[in-house]
Image (cartoon, rainbow, N blue to C red; front, side):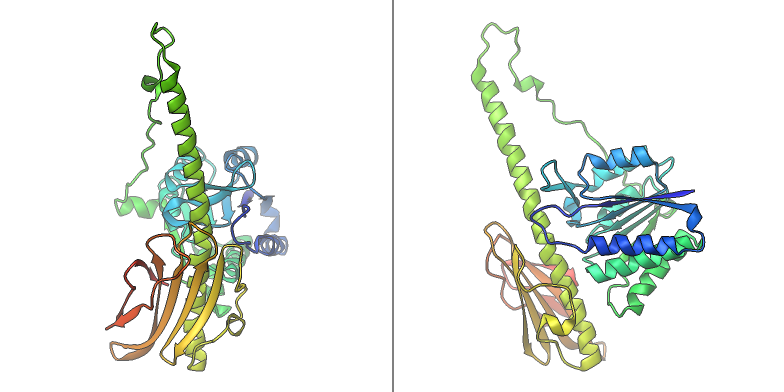
Length: 365
């Protein structure tokens, strides 16, 4: 019997994902599968960081599937005890899964920029799938459907991964290269033993006055408590910001890739989100999105922060010539500092795109 545990999280304050649709399609696919009697599925919604180990211990699954937001190096987005954002980084997740490696054989992280976490977890788990960049709702759903349809038919994890990627391509979504399969044997063979090191928390005992000290002064203790409280609040605020910014990175990447496909099919760029048939609203709680077709050779999309403390983004698709072939080149730029104004227009220099000063290139979208 193969047990599949699906952990889903979509905290308050971040963009809403179509998690219900993904979970429904997975469940429907397994129910109609040829070997459905070999699978048991459990769904855990609004998962808090404390729920991860509890769900795994209670259910003892062979496959753990996470569906939600990812924020790259900062971690996967779970919920805190109040329904807000709680980022869990790669080292923490790898350390957790190491404890359950005796029965967890496959982990699927269906979240943007989750390849970093996948690489860490794959040090201990046989098969781990993560996303190398932002992935849209439609692509994430298509991949999950193909992956579990294959497993339900008795196919291997490798085959299921390939079918998931193919299904994205068949659906006409240019994100079939985003899912990445990592295996524990592969990492060991390549000598990628970058096993995360879990260091104990700094010992603060030496900073707290001893009760045996006759000259005990409470002021240093109060100062320390105050400092720790301020640090905790600052860390939480930073996590929320990064989770909100992951929305903009994901949307900019999806729009860029859709523009590339649209241009290939129509020899022009789309001027609206509706033309691209994307499930992206021009206005969200955190950002305003706008497409600007500059001319027949380039299209721009901006993600303008609506609140203080968030960075803004600009994505661009150039129609150009690389090594004698007509093609499109895309990238996204992030303001270095929080800003309610996206950076200036990126420039195509040869076959490379340079971001405007004051912004950094997020890489090929």
